[in-house]
Image (cartoon, rainbow, N blue to C red):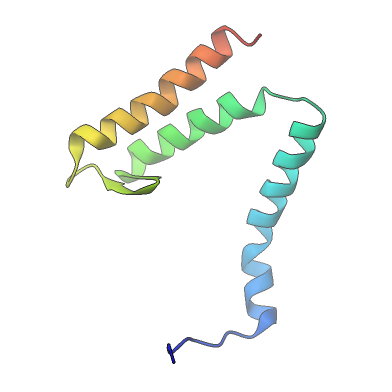
Length: 89
Protein backbone atom coordinates (compact mmCIF):
# COMPACT_ATOMS: atom_id res chain seq x y z
CA UNK A 1 0.00 0.00 0.00
CA UNK A 2 1.28 3.48 -0.86
CA UNK A 3 1.60 5.71 2.20
CA UNK A 4 -0.32 8.94 1.91
CA UNK A 5 -0.85 11.90 4.15
CA UNK A 6 -4.35 12.37 5.41
CA UNK A 7 -5.48 15.97 5.42
CA UNK A 8 -8.76 16.96 6.92
CA UNK A 9 -11.23 18.10 4.29
CA UNK A 10 -11.62 21.47 6.02
CA UNK A 11 -7.93 22.30 5.58
CA UNK A 12 -7.90 21.66 1.81
CA UNK A 13 -10.97 23.60 0.74
CA UNK A 14 -9.91 27.08 1.96
CA UNK A 15 -6.55 26.77 0.21
CA UNK A 16 -8.09 25.48 -3.02
CA UNK A 17 -10.80 28.11 -3.43
CA UNK A 18 -8.74 30.45 -5.68
CA UNK A 19 -8.19 27.59 -8.11
CA UNK A 20 -11.88 26.66 -8.09
CA UNK A 21 -12.84 30.31 -8.62
CA UNK A 22 -10.41 30.71 -11.53
CA UNK A 23 -11.62 27.54 -13.24
CA UNK A 24 -15.25 28.61 -12.80
CA UNK A 25 -14.43 32.05 -14.22
CA UNK A 26 -12.72 30.49 -17.26
CA UNK A 27 -15.77 28.30 -17.95
CA UNK A 28 -18.16 31.25 -17.58
CA UNK A 29 -16.03 33.48 -19.80
CA UNK A 30 -15.75 30.73 -22.41
CA UNK A 31 -19.49 30.06 -22.32
CA UNK A 32 -20.20 33.75 -22.84
CA UNK A 33 -17.64 33.87 -25.68
CA UNK A 34 -15.34 36.31 -23.91
CA UNK A 35 -12.21 35.13 -25.72
CA UNK A 36 -10.13 38.14 -24.62
CA UNK A 37 -9.27 36.34 -21.39
CA UNK A 38 -7.04 33.77 -23.09
CA UNK A 39 -4.34 36.09 -24.49
CA UNK A 40 -4.26 37.82 -21.11
CA UNK A 41 -3.91 34.45 -19.39
CA UNK A 42 -1.06 33.37 -21.68
CA UNK A 43 0.69 36.71 -21.24
CA UNK A 44 0.48 36.52 -17.43
CA UNK A 45 1.61 32.89 -17.60
CA UNK A 46 4.67 33.84 -19.67
CA UNK A 47 5.58 36.75 -17.38
CA UNK A 48 5.18 34.53 -14.32
CA UNK A 49 7.44 31.89 -15.89
CA UNK A 50 10.14 34.48 -16.61
CA UNK A 51 9.90 35.77 -13.03
CA UNK A 52 10.15 32.29 -11.47
CA UNK A 53 12.61 30.78 -13.94
CA UNK A 54 10.42 27.73 -14.35
CA UNK A 55 7.62 26.72 -16.70
CA UNK A 56 5.12 23.89 -16.47
CA UNK A 57 4.09 22.73 -19.90
CA UNK A 58 3.66 18.97 -20.17
CA UNK A 59 6.55 18.75 -17.71
CA UNK A 60 8.48 21.12 -15.46
CA UNK A 61 11.09 23.08 -17.41
CA UNK A 62 13.80 25.02 -15.60
CA UNK A 63 15.57 28.04 -17.07
CA UNK A 64 18.84 26.82 -15.52
CA UNK A 65 18.62 23.16 -16.56
CA UNK A 66 16.99 23.53 -20.01
CA UNK A 67 17.48 27.14 -21.13
CA UNK A 68 16.62 26.64 -24.81
CA UNK A 69 13.42 24.73 -24.09
CA UNK A 70 12.45 27.19 -21.34
CA UNK A 71 12.81 30.21 -23.63
CA UNK A 72 11.06 28.40 -26.47
CA UNK A 73 8.00 27.72 -24.30
CA UNK A 74 7.94 31.17 -22.66
CA UNK A 75 8.45 32.94 -25.99
CA UNK A 76 5.60 30.91 -27.44
CA UNK A 77 3.22 31.99 -24.64
CA UNK A 78 4.13 35.63 -25.00
CA UNK A 79 4.16 35.65 -28.81
CA UNK A 80 0.84 33.82 -29.09
CA UNK A 81 -0.79 36.21 -26.64
CA UNK A 82 0.53 39.27 -28.51
CA UNK A 83 -0.66 37.86 -31.85
CA UNK A 84 -4.06 37.11 -30.34
CA UNK A 85 -4.29 40.64 -28.94
CA UNK A 86 -3.23 42.19 -32.26
CA UNK A 87 -5.54 40.01 -34.37
CA UNK A 88 -8.49 39.08 -32.13
CA UNK A 89 -10.81 37.87 -34.91
